[in-house]
Amino acid sequence: MDMPGQEAPLLLRETIGPVAVLTLNRPAARNSLSEQLIGALHAALDAAKRDDAIRAVVIAANGPVFSAGHDLKELTARRSDADGGRAFFDHMMTTCSAMMQAIVALPKPVIAAVQGVATAAGCQLVASCDLAVASDAATFVTPGVDIGLFCSTPAVALGRNVARKHAMEMLLTGEPVSAARASEIGLVNRVVPAGSERATAIELATLIASKSAQAITLGKIAFYRQIDMPLADAYRLASEAMARNMMVEDACEGLAAGIEKRPPQWRHAAPSPSAAPLSAPHAAVDHDNYSDDDIRGILRGVKTIAMVGASANTVRPSYFVFKYMLERGYNVIPINPGQAGKEMLGQRFAASLRDIAQPIDMVDVFRASENLMPVLDEVLALPHRPKVIWTQLGVRNDEFARKAEAAGIMVVMNRCPKIEYGRLSSEISWMGINSRTLSSKRAPAPNGGFQRLSLERQSQGGGETAAADRAARENNSSS
Image (cartoon, rainbow, N blue to C red; front, side):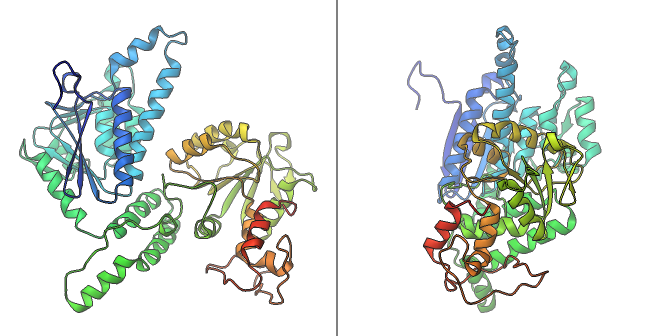
C-alpha cells in the first residue's frame, strides 16, 4: 500500500497463477503513455520474459480510459527545447515503438483487457497485443488527423491487424469505432459485458498458459516471422519451425499422451534460443558465442545478400567473401556509391540499400564499428527489412545490435560468413585451410565442384575439433 503523500506507481504488477497482469495506473492522465510509463511497461515485459513461472501476460488499465495514447502535454512541453523538441520526439517515437515490438517479440502470449477508450498509441497498444478482450462500452480511435498529426506509428500495428481499407478509414477519418465493430474487423477477439473484460482476459490467459509453453514459444515466433513473407518463404520457415517443434520434449509427451489417451504432462519451460525459428525477434543473444544451429539456420535461410562496402579490388577481403558466397548459390548484391552502375562478377553495384528493388534477406557489412549506425538507419527505412545484419571480423557495436534487435532483426557480429560456411560444411576441414587439420574424407560436392552447406549437424570427426573451429573464426586471412 502507498504511504500518504507517496506517488502511486505508474504501472501495477500482479501475478495470478501463471499470468502476469500489468495495469496502467495513470487514470487522472487518462493512462497516457508518458516516457516513464513506456519505460515501466517495457521493463515489466522484459521481466515477464525472463520469469519461467509466467506463461502469459494481461495488459489492463485503471479508470474509465484504457489509454489516451502519447502524453501530449509531455510532448508539447519540449517545444521550448533548442531544436523545437525534435530530438525528444525522435526519442519518444523510437522508445514507444521498441516497447510495442517487445510485446510482439515476447515469447509468451499478451492479451489486452480494454475497459474504455483506446486512443492513438493506446489503440496501437491493443493492436500490438496477440489477443484483445474488450468491454462492450470500449471504443477505439486514431484521431491524429483532427489535430494535424497523422497516426503513423499506430498505423503500423493497426494495419497488421485489420484489413487495409478498415485501417485507412480509421486513420483518415479519426472517427471512433465501437467494440462490436472492432470485433467485426478483427481488432479485438471478444466483446464482453462492461466490468468483466479483465476477468475474461485473465481466464483466457490462464487457458493458454495450460498449454505447452514450448509449443507456444516456437509458434508465436514463427507466426510473426512468416506473416509478412512471400508464400513460399512463409511455408519454408513454418515447416522448419514445425520440424524443430517436433523435436522438443513437450511434442514427444503430447504425441505419446494422445496415443495413450491420457492428459499430457507439460514441461512448461521455454525452449533454448537455438531451438527457436530463424530470426526470432528480440531473442536474448550472446554476441560472444553464437550457436552453430543459429549460424547454420541463417546461412540456410537467406537467399539475397546485400554487401555494404563491397570492393572490386581483388585483394580486398570483401571481394573474396563476395566471390565465395556468389559461387555457393547466393544472390549477392554489391553496395558501394563509388562503384554504382559498374559490375563485379556479373553483379551490378548499387549506390545504397534503398536502390535495391528486391527484398533483401541479409545485409553483410564491411564498415568500421563506429559506422554501423548509419547503415542500420538505412536498413530500418527499407519497406521490406532484412532478416539479418552480419558484420565482419573485428566489427562489433553492441548499441547497434540492441537497436537492430529491437526492430526484430537478427544480428551477427565479428564473424565472416565465408569462414562460417566453410566451417559448418566441412569445407575448411577438408582443405586444411585455417583448421590445422587435413581430412582424408572429402564431403560430396554436388554442384559444380563446390561443397554446399549441409542441412544437418556436422559430426565431430573429420578433423572438426574445437581448436579448428576457433582458428577458423579468429583467422580472417582466407576472407
